[in-house]
Image 1: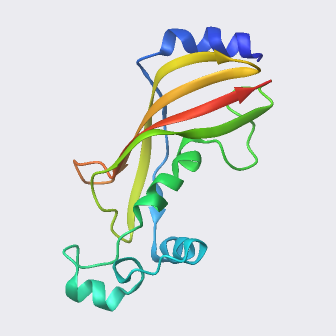
Image 2: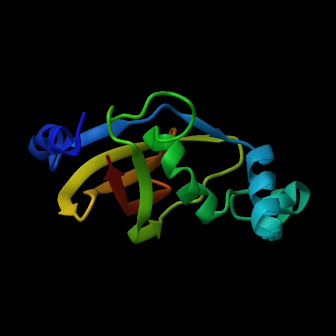
Length: 155
């Protein structure tokens, strides 16, 4: 698929949900790995005993930025599977226009992403997509995170 074909395919989908991910487990191993990667060892994330005693959630919670960092995985842009847009050479996470962390992700919870295509825009060498992602927590009404992410496609 070329960028022109991607534009033709995606244009009519503006304003609609374009992807719903599988559920992803946010366990203590994932939280601890993120803490090591970012040197963020705040007790609310890594000290299970203290969190059980002192936190309002009675367990550790994921870092907000860990939740946001799951967006490429939830969107299906990671791994060795073929890209969502065959013929598109590269998919780049270009940025985030807005992000809100609305609910804590407790250790052991599962999250998934709902992606709605908000806009498409041509730029020199590619196509820019803006998607609204809502990261849901299984069994909870209030989402963990809502973010407007910017993705760029290159041929």
